[in-house]
Length: 352
Ligand code: AMP
Ligand code: MG
Image (cartoon, rainbow, N blue to C red; front, side, top):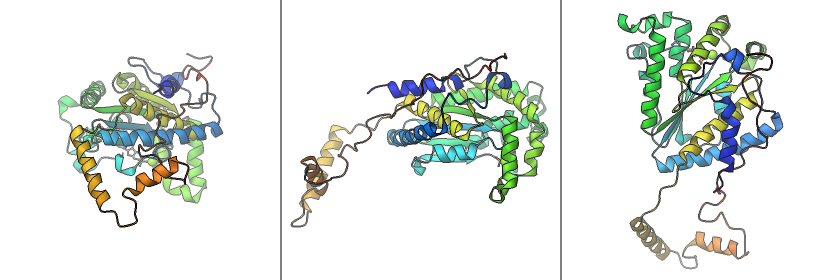
């Protein structure tokens, strides 16, 4: 099987990946308006291809039942997390996906260590879990508003000035443990500009059917924009690892954020390359015995195996049969992208 689509996807997302050990300055290094020279029309086509690809890989992941995937989505309010999940996962079997949204912690959650509530929502083998907000809130909102740390009732020795460095280390180690156990961790930061957030907030106020998405607290949070940008930069610098990388996805164009997210997830699944389990000789013998039994039950006049009969007729050009018994149409990954080499995402011209 050609690896070309996999290579093209890898090339497309490479400029978004934070190389481990890099010191990130979000405002300097990443442009929320970047779109790799793509136009919306092309991107919609690509997204359809990507969604079909994800469906196929998710099916194999579930059948193999060995690996799981955790996709963490972080963004500021109006960053597009909900819409991205809705579009990117639109073709995937809902039985194989669990989406968890993390809000202000409950009393029960605060009574445990800070990773407890995230641990409870991890994927099973064969599943894709999506965290809509994630354990990274513990070094973002908790850092920007330290009163959250007070509510966590930590003992004195766990509350020192090195608390954030400790959390980065603990999170990296936790993710390493998950990876070593067969759970791939991949993290996406939807990078929105301040002006685009203003526009989206106003849209939520202007359109009655969007009012529910807006809260006055969102504008209060926006006043802490610069502190959040610093917290994001520190988080990206400290927690993008070889085993659980961060991707900074430009989010000012929703369609571009969606295609990037689909590509990152597809890349992760292609890396796992899950396979349908092989049927053993013994299991194959059982299958053939079961077939003989079912064939003997054919009512008079009916073909012994209606499915095979239809398929053979279709092959002989005597009628349109269903797909071939091997499940046809899954010949491998679909086209990765029409665009050429993406421009380097990152360094803005004239700066840094
Ligand atoms: P939303 O995603 O708009 O429903 O909002 C969820 C809210 O919960 C956001 O304001 C988050 O900052 C907040 N939140 C999520 N996780 C935590 C946490 N660990 N500590 C405090 N607030 C949190
Ligand atoms: Mg909100």
